[in-house]
Amino acid sequence: MLTGEKTVRRADVMEDTGASISPNVDIGQVEGAFVMGLGLWLSEELRFNPTSGRLLTRDSWEYKPPASQDIPEVFNTYLYNSNDNPFGVLGSKATGEPPLLMAMSAFLALRDAITDCRVSLGMERKDWFQFDGPGTNERVIASSGITSDYFKLY
Image 1 (cartoon, helix red, strand yellow):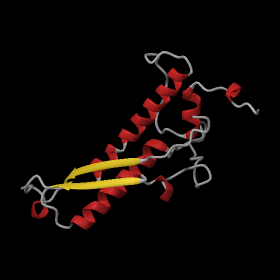
Image 2 (tube, rainbow, N blue to C red):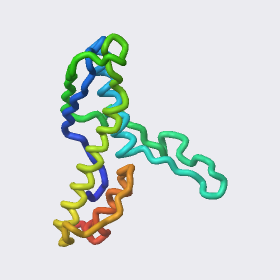
Image 3 (cartoon, rainbow, N blue to C red):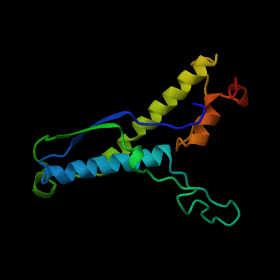
């Protein structure tokens, strides 16, 4: 909590692909979409100039898309065949959109971790706090209840 840094230790993703046309392609789509979702919910923040509307986060110095270190350390992906989809090509189903949204689970886990940190600092578990996505390092620190008093050299 002192730095706001976060690591996704493990992700287990199960996707209903119907009759998959190419399981290898589908696994790549599922994993890629999930990692994109991690970026959406944990690091990618768009900032705009309030007067001109100009995008201020135009490069990776300010805008943080997911990189190789953002992939979960243990990443288990399972394809579930729920039988043919009569409306899909050769009975298949789309695989990219659902895992993008499933990555919200990492944001909710981060919120739970912040809640646990706040409780360890003496706050009540039921105390409400503002924590909007994406869960950037700055927002984690601001929501955690940690102040500069915790940064002491001994």
